[in-house]
Length: 500
Ligand code: GLU
Image (cartoon, rainbow, N blue to C red; front, side, top):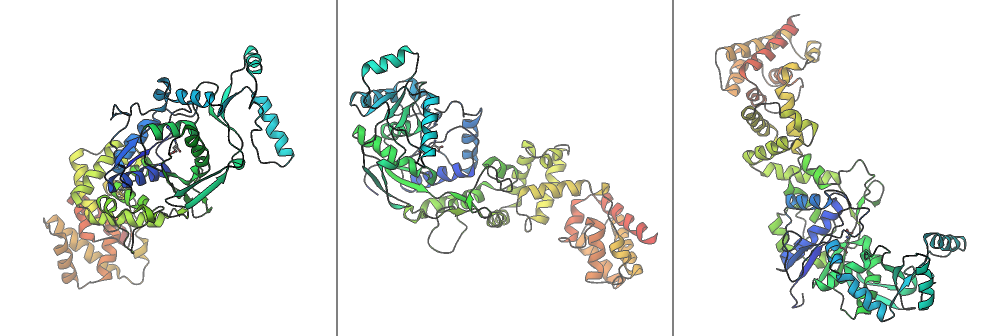
């Protein structure tokens, strides 16, 4: 790394909520900044006013926080040297127009009074001639008189950047190596200021990255074709461009295309992972491996470890396939390694937030009882759940166990089991509970001894009695989730069903 102090930025457009693709850009910028002891900047690119959504910026901020990504400068943490951090506010201060004017004065940009209809007709003609769509430069070099005549008609111009002919724009990309584009293949002179006075993305981003002293631009590979246009502007303004790194896009393994918001089978917004009970540590770890990997086979890394081992040279060029199984596996690893107390707190948090139907319905359970239920459920299921939403679902089914109608036919019509033995086990355990036994594991063992029934003969009926399923985790732990009265009632129901 060169001596210049590293400054990177994550620059979302608040046109939607924090998506896994955005989070991936934010995360690599974050790792880069923290690894090199640099500065992480949050800049809001809100010039596309029609596409901005309400709460878009807020969603970015909240979900980044949840992921554990913070920044040193941004709208809520301004450094006076660089503020403001929203492009709409920067535009009001005339930051962009000043440079637009400079390009106009130098003859490197010009006003284009073409109407929408004219442009559409131009594109249509190009399509008919099998030409790649491009602006044909019709307003380049027009006289002041021609411009005045257009103004007199009430036309509002856009401002276009004039691209030199047959010029190579090239750079050394951290992830992609040498990349180059010829100016003749960039779609012609492009708009840098819209007719409403707003700069376009390709212009504003250059002015901002330069005036904010950004040293490295890490962003999604979908921006590669914008980079030559931006380099053209750096050159025209006599500025050095930052080092670029185009982060691999996330692909859907089923479609083998870029993950799309239409791919309904994949969770894609960070808020969705959160509400399904993925742990932020696991999501952070998972995303860090989308387009990058450390040396070796190990896959579980804490945030601090990732900051330490992060090496931008290991950014990949190939697309990153989204692997749901791996995400679930990773989340399960984090769940296994966390304390029951911590998992209980996080599950309680999900219930309080009530962002899913499953979580919301638990709000009807009194808090102390709920906490206790969650804790015991986690104790039983920590080893077998992939996400906390599953804990929430278990809690609800345990809480409502008496409303269920278990099907005891599985055992009634099963030749492997002797009805008398089963009844002896069930009544034996019921008696022990009625007599106050509180070590359930011990009680089951004693019943086994007293009845001479063991192994599957003992546990299969008990699993069925307490969970309605024949395979269950440690049954004495499940018994401990319910109240004693519920345990007795469940045994009683099965006894009656077998006696009928
Ligand atoms: N606002 C752009 C986006 O959300 C940022 C691209 C860049 O980092 O230059 O895609």
